Amino acid sequence: MDAPASPRSRTLVLVVVLLGIFMAVMDGIVVSIALPTITAFYGVDVAQSQWVITAYLMTVTALFLVFGRVAESVGKSRLFLAGMALFTVASFGCASAPNLLVLIGMRVLQAIGASAAFAIPAAIIPGIFPRGEQGRAMGAVAATVSVAGLAAPALGGFLTALFGWEYIFLINIPAGIALLAVGLRVMDLHEPRRSSLSMDWTGALTLMAGIVAFMLCLEEFTAGIRVSAPLVLLGLTALGAFTLFVRTERRHSRPLMDFSLLRDPLFGIPLASCLLFFVALFIFNICGPFYFEGVMGLSPAEVGGIFMIVPAITVVASPLTGWFFDRRESPAYAAIGLSLCTVALLILAWGAVRQDFILILASLVVLAFGNALFNSPNNTEIMRAAPVEKMGLASSLTAMARNFGMALGVSVAGILLTFQVSLAGTESGVASADPALLAGAIGVVMLVAALTGGIGVAAQVLRWRMLTRGRRGPGQA
Image (cartoon, rainbow, N blue to C red; front, top):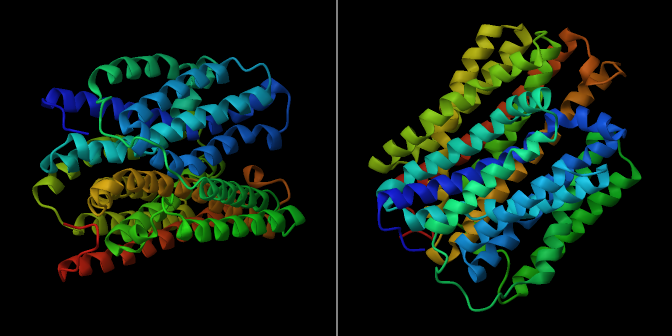
């Protein structure tokens, strides 16, 4: 896509893209706050209502790579706007669903639209911003993802408490209409695209089957922390599907996945770091409310206020980081940023065990600055490491890594918390665990989150050394 003629046009396109990202990320998380209300409204149990969240996450993650390939045929801007149109219509369907089954079906449609829109923004931005402005634009993207993810609990609680759970979906409608009205005017709907869609459909189906089976396997294990027949069956299904996907892709003339891109360490390392970062971040997202309510005795509104610390700092610091990165590019930004996040998680672990509220708040400030310093440069470097013709795939892989990291973080936190509470002989669950036990258990989980971040730091340092020595990957100029 050619760059828009004026800075104002570029800014409007960026605003449209950021609003779409915010809505897609927000709706993947915000429902968790309203889940008890939705469960009571439809008169079902949690095992059934949980599918409102699970169906969305699985669908979004499974379709990222497919839409990355579709974008080459229909155009990135057209796919983005079509995805947001479907997302907006499905949001109305969610709010007006007469029963839980319809709500889950509408969530699947909503996720299809979100996946189409969320898969390609990182490919749109390099096409509309010159190199000296890409860091700031990617910083805005990073800030939007972080703010949406961390602000979702507070916004979900506010809307549900004041207006009802339906409004967590209804709020998408005016935002979606405004996005489409502006997007149709400022986005390039006539960008160059392929004349026909050529895709490895067998590979697409096996990838989707593998992702769905793997996520269901994690959910099955989280629910019982035991080896069961469904767990084994889902695990074998995921393994078989992923194996078939790799074999199919290697033989296809137009594969869904270009493994040469992943083998380039200058692309693969920041992509893996992105996944690890979101695993660690969402371990905290899940543990935080349990800790602040179950150990500190805070109200949901007070917890929402604490969770606003990180996005409040991130929304200012991320674009600034991008601005500095544009003026002096260096792999040090991502490495130092992820190091700060890891240190913050270690402090969180220590503060959780000590039940030191001031120490925990200080760690959140460090986490926010580390988040801002890592995400914008890392995302920019991922896209710059990819050849121009593979930008759509690179963007899809980035979105997939981010979303898959979120889902893994949720599962890891649930598994570790449930296991520790069960091991202590508490049968009533995490929510009813003794505060001292819960504080210790969450401290252990935060150590695991810090270890996850530490692995990413080691990878970033390796990449830093490679670039310092002048090694270039196949996607580098």
